[in-house]
Length: 596
Ligand SMILES: Nc1ncnc2c1ncn2[C@@H]1O[C@H](COP(=O)(O)OP(=O)(O)OP(=O)(O)O)[C@@H](O)[C@H]1O
Image (cartoon, rainbow, N blue to C red; front, side):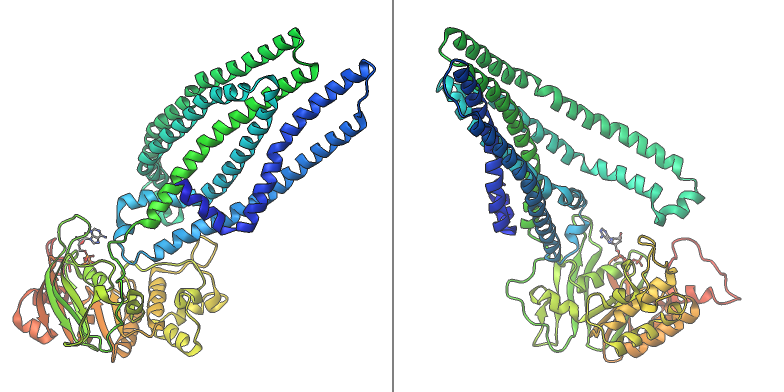
């Protein structure tokens, strides 16, 4: 992982990183120079005391210069390190977002295991790059410091630096090992951490606030949170304690080695084979070495943990999407007849929700898809958008003779041909304008038309700033009603000049007048376009040329309103049930299970 992470770091700002490395090396050498200055000062004082000569002024100037270099490199190192970490953070987060962009399907984002990865990657991306930079530089500084000062210890024997390093190795190894264990445990527990955070959010965030108050949910949430937190923290605390206590014996060994060398140096001075300056050098050098080696071990441990995060990050970047873009994408055919041929599909490893569906929808046709909850209507359009690939069968675009399998078509190009109002459309808390344009360039007439046809114009009268009003509560914007949000989602779809229009319950939250207006707009808009309308309001299917009825993943009826009524099957039954709700003479409610 280091062999991939370091080049990544280097590539994000090569000039800056070179300068930073030079500064850190100088910074790391300052302690070694200080140690020698101490020795030369003590030896100089000794010579002066015994009538010899010593240039103490030069030594004082050297001290001052060394201290100045130390301070300058400290400040410069901190500034440059901040810059490098900023670059690295941006490049890491950018790569993560680009990878998301390169995952055209929904399979990965809906996988619960992936939620854990995203949680780890998303929270880590905020601080791991920064911490890795700080850790690597700290490590380099400490290693240079150790090498420089250990070199000074050659004064008392060639073997001394070796003994010092050997004394610290078990500590370094233990630090790395403990960090690895800690990381693995934290990763295993990500799901629990996410659940804790979720219960907290439910208690605190505005989207849950009404139910939390009405149903007095807080005691229940607190109970869940406290039970979960106690269990989770117990495990994590045990791990942290083991980390702290586990390194104690190794620290004791490192301390014993330096204490032994100190005693040896004092003994040699007593024998007259080391000068007073040499002894000062050994004492300061040992203190420095001990500190720097401690830092090396600590940085190695921290670095290991950060690198494990980067390993996860690289694994994610390398992950092959199940919905794979075609190697040689074919253009979208000029005529857009949609054909499903024996399509079966199940989410992940769950039972199939589409069972051998075959249908052809000629270009320009308006098709309503109806059926009970969970029948597979939304799944069918998600397959058409290539959010998933069928497990069996195929989806073809184009007229007979020039049909192309959807899996071979350029995904981005295909999606530009489609506009959709999803049942669970996204509520972007940006301005109204940005919510409609979605990053596309603005065309005044088209924007005005989309706002008018969606019925959003009435909502605009009530907000300051018109289309520039920020919406949603998170950033203090204006909140919209459910119906106004739905009109906004509709305006978004209408703004796109798409050849295929997908409307999944597009009027569920609209009042009758708005619904009639919006359907009027859809009717106008669907002219010349292929339109798929999923709805439970059977009155609205009258605008369709053709109705598909789905039940338990199968397409069970296909025809016009009149044909299906005449057939007296599922559609006729659904129609009768719904009509009866508006009919004074008929019973208003049917038994459960008849939901449309
Ligand atoms: N992302 C998903 N992961 C797993 N199962 C899913 C997913 N989305 C839908 N399902 C399941 O697939 C089945 C079909 O769902 P789908 O949303 O296609 O039904 P629908 O006909 O659109 O229903 P509704 O009228 O309630 O919107 C349901 O049983 C649902 O639980």
